[in-house]
Every structure is written in structure tokens, then in C-alpha cells.
Amino acid sequence: MKNLLSTQEQLKSGKIKLPDLAQTYLDVIKSKNSDINAFVAYDEESVLKQAADIQKKIDSGSAGDLAGAVVGVKDVISEKGKKLTCSSRMLENFEAVYNATVIDKLHAEDALLIGRLNMDEFAMGSSTENSIHGATKNPHDTSKVSGGSSGGSAAAVAAGMCNVSLGSDTGGSIRQPASYCGVVGLKPTYSRVSRYGLVAFASSFDCIGPFSNSVEDAALMLQHIAGHDPMDNSSADVPVENYAEAIKSDSGKLRIGVPEEYFGDGLDDEIREMINDRLKGMERDGAELVPINLPHSKYGIATYYILATAEASSNLARYDGVRYGHRADFKEIEKELGKEREAIEKEIKVAVGADKEEALERLGKVDSPLARLYKKSRTEGFGSEVKRRIMLGTYVLSSGYYDAYYAKAQKVRRLIKQDFENAFDNVDVIVSPTAPTTAFDLGSNQDDPVQMYLNDIYTTTANLAGICGISVPAGTHSNGLPVGIQFLGNSFREADILRAGRRIEQLNG
Image (cartoon, rainbow, N blue to C red):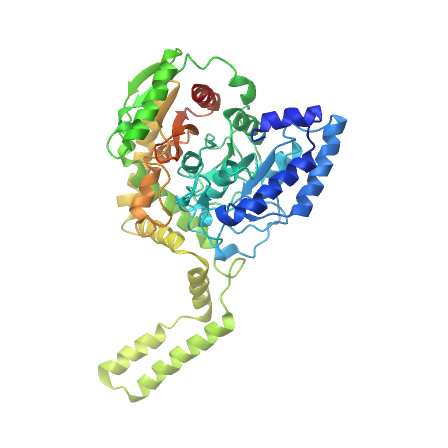
């Protein structure tokens, strides 16, 4: 019983009971999680109690529309009373003090939240290897990555540990792991789903969205987590469609834009052939394939990593070891500084001339205890990838480089958005591969950050433009790993990409 909708039918008919279903998923977690490492926390007793309470509502006919949804939650989304680690040492002991809006919406519709899911630290990565909890492995081949940063969310659904999950997408972090793990991953339009309670990476890019085993399930989840939220200043006050009904309409009449830029060098030949085959199938059913150009997409990766890291350096400045988060040992810092000063003072006593002046200058530059606390807390608390992005973001925002990099990247972002606006004047959706390859080997890109970043080559432009996107399984590669096909839609046109994704499912049988 992988699909949410079929599960709901069986719950309503009484064929199954939610506590039994919850126990089944908990048993799968206990049997598989040691190998896959998708869940970082779950409370069996609490889950079964919630399931029993929801079952009473099902029996009385008063349950919400998401009763039967067993939901894993990425560990970057706040749940009151639960640890909110963001897979970082910086927050490894932090407990959330309020619910994210999406969590309240799930509870209001009687979804069952089963546990917290692994991720790249602060959502920075493309493989879910940058985590204090260890790497999440691909359920199809545990020697491969699950993708990132929402790799735990994708792997949990693919492995049958839950029937839906929530992730976050800043530059492809829902769609790329969905492709690698062979599940559906939906990135809504920016501002379609409230970001209140989502720990910020890059505030003008971040989106919360669902993973599922079917497009219908993704549509149902989106329908209930979307909507205006006064707690989020960026939240759009746009009516929410009935997505579950919208995807039932004819998808064969879609005009599908096929950008030549997304099918060129660097794309695995078998993936190209598979996607072209699916497009021919859609064309036979009445879809129109329209060649288009997105001329500025070649600047997408560079533009994204300038702007996203700039926002990250600003957002992560709050983690200083004073207000909350990891704090270095202050007594050890005082001892350390005392020894440094003592060593320099000894030099000063015996030094003469220029050597003495140099030693005095060094003594004056010794950190204050507070400055050293900030420095050491952040050094110990952040992992290497987060430090890399903070450094890069700080650099592009610094005096002398702001205009050369950050300001120019903002201008290119506008050109990329204009490319999509022009394209959507003539097409309903745009198709592309989700990723240039299938899931790669664990550890293979850890020492090559540029190669790691290039895994997001087809996904970052949607975040730059603020439009919606979905990855749907297109088939299985000859290496036995899943391949994803991506559909991009105009702002607040999620129904279009859901219909296109549903048609791919039908072609896949």
C-alpha cells in the first residue's frame, strides 16, 4: 500500500486500521533505516498514539482529507517539541519551540507525522552526504547517493518507510533526489507554500514541497499545504486550486516546450533517449512539442551559486554561539588566549628593535574572549560545505566585489526569468531531464565541489525564476537506477505540470 489515495480508500472501507498501518511503516523503518539512514528521529509510542486518535476520527466520519498520509518531515522544518538539527552540529541539541505553518496544516487535515528525515547540513548539498547523522543511501543501490539536500525525504518514500514526505527545494533539492530515488518530487511556485518555520538557507529561493509515489498524491498534498500565510511576508495571496481534480482533465492537449539548451553536451545518452521516447508518447496522445530557447540558462549554475551563497552568508550569521546553537567551551577559550598572550609577552621581554615592535603588534591583535567565542563556535559548529558557501557568499558581498558579482548576478537572474516568461507565452510546460546522470557513487564528488554543483544544472533556473517544477520517474536506466523527467510550469500553474507528470505515469503503465 504505497500510494496515499489507495490507502485512504482502504481506511474508509475498514479493510485496514491506521494504527496497524503506522506499525507497518515503523517496522519498515526499524528493518531498513540502519542501511539507508533516511530517518534521524522517530518516536514509536507517540506515532501509535496519534494513529489511534486519528482512527477514531476515521471511524466517526470526521477525519480530515489527509487521514492516512504517513508523513516524514525533513529536519529543516520546525515541529514544536522535536529536535530541529538541520543535520548540523551547530543545532544538534536545539529543540523547536513552534510549528511551521505546513506542520499545522498537516495536523489540521489529520496527517500522521512519523519522524524526522536526514538532509545535507542546512540544506547545502546535492547528495545528503554533508550530515552529522551520516550519509543517506539510495534504496535502489546503497553504494549510490540518494541526492540532496532532501535525500532523506526521497529515500524514505522510495524505501516504503512512509507514503509521503516533505522536503525543501532551494536549487533542485526536491526534484534531483526524487529523480535519483525514483519517486515524484514537487517544487511549488515560490510563495505558494508558506516558509514560516523553514530554517532559511537562501530566503528568495527556498520552497517546501512534497515527495510521493504518485502525481495524484503530490497533488493532494500540495492542495493542503499551499495557501496564503500572514506569518510569511513573502507568501502570495493567490487562490489554491483543487489540484486533485485538475489533474483528471485531459493532459494530451498540452503544448510542451523542448529547450535545446537542456538536451546538449553533458547529458547521459540513455537518459536523453528515454526522455525523447516519453515525449513521443505524449505527442502521439495529442501533446504538441514546441522547440524553444532559454538562452541565459547556461549562466544558471554560476548565477545561482553567487546569489544563494550570498543569502546563506547573511542568514547563517545568526549562529554565533551566544543566543542559541553550538557554543565552544568558554573556559577553554580563556585558557587558550591566556597562553597566547603569555607566549607573546615572553617574546617582548627579550626582543629588541623591529622584533619587539612586531611582537607588540601581534599582542594587540590577539582576539578578545567574545571574538574567539564567535570564531571557535562557528568553526566547530559548521561543516566544510557550509563554511565553503559562507565564505563564497561573504566574498561576493564584500566591498569591491559586490558590483562585479552579486549585482551582476541579480541582473542575470532577471534575464533568466524573462526567458521563461517569453517561453510561457507560447507553451504550457517546459520539459527537461531532472539530472544529467543517474545517482552517482557515495564519496565520488566529495572532493570536487564544482562537479557536485553541476548535478543541479537543470534545476536551479526554476528557483532563480520562482516558477514551479516537478520530477516524475521516466523509467529505469540500464544500470538499474531510476531516471527522472522534469516539467517546469509558469508561476502558480502547478496544475499544468501535475497533468504532464500524470501523463508520464500513464505512459509508464
